[in-house]
Length: 154
Figure 1 (cartoon, rainbow, N blue to C red):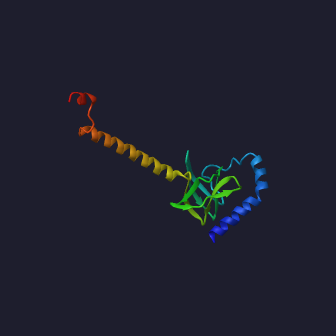
Figure 2 (cartoon, helix red, strand yellow):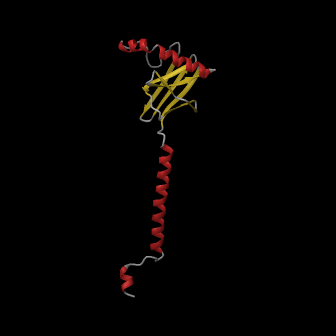
Figure 3 (cartoon, one colour):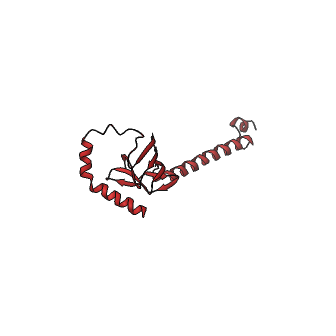
């Protein structure tokens, strides 16, 4: 039911895209400040890092929390420690469905599709280098490899 609400809200946002572009042409309302109360909710804090955006938000009603940052498939969303699908809002922005009123900790994080594969290959390569180094150290300490001077003197 709540996901149907979010999908209908996204459709309504898309239908109003032309009126929204006119709003973007005007100067933003200076009365809306960080943490200001609004009928839809209250932003408590936002922390922007290179690969992560953390938002602490209190929603007065269900809806779509939209981050006006570029949507890309490698971005994901975690809401109150649960992974949720990330929606493309207006074809450009990132959004996540908030199913009911309440406090939310939303984390948008960037994780490329092959991230786990890359980490696994790096770990295998590191273990291989470590095993070669240990094997080389073990071989030289047991006398398995002799210097050329030792062979000549025999």
